[in-house]
Image (cartoon, rainbow, N blue to C red):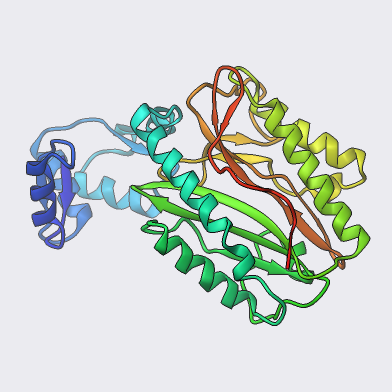
Length: 316
């Protein structure tokens, strides 16, 4: 059963007839969604309702309970029911990821024409977004990150009017949505010659990413993948500069399970058919930061790299 208001009833009915959406009964909304949901629960004499507790606000739940005239004990919090079904990608989904990863790598191959001294971070980000559009993505999977010089030490910096200058490290993190599925990639650029310490940070991050990629295989724990990357950074004195997890799952959303992190559940193991990012980084205020990210399909014997292409430091 799908509850929609007048903006969507026609398209929902058409998609159901065409088979582009699963078979559902379309129910309309006359006043509010809460009233419509409550009315259907009363009409069909439903006595227990499960809701996705990770996505429902307290206020929303209270409104639903009032509209349905059910006691709080009749509502059952659930979590990960849908997410568990999305963990393992089927052949249809894998085919989309292969096309999306290749298209994203093609966009990355154009960075040399967009990154140059004197251009602002916003200008470079706009070029990347136009590249995503030309590559066939429906829209960016998230706000494109272009972080140069001191801004590269901020993991999720927003593009600013700062102009790229000689000696800058530049973090370029972008992704797109193709046929409803998200892919995500990060590459590094240098504007001219960068300092020795900045170059070392990049090289250690690349080594850490390779260690994580080499670790991934069906049956390996998510925590072990994170530890492989983290150990490389810690051995080079950059452990404290690695302030996020090594990766995350991809799917209908850009951040899904599994979580490749030191906070992962100890027995949370990777399974063949999972798709995830591998993106260690290191960020040192006053010097800069580096992150490298690729998307992989987990297999029984290792990985299939979905975002092919060079990971070398792009010098412009």
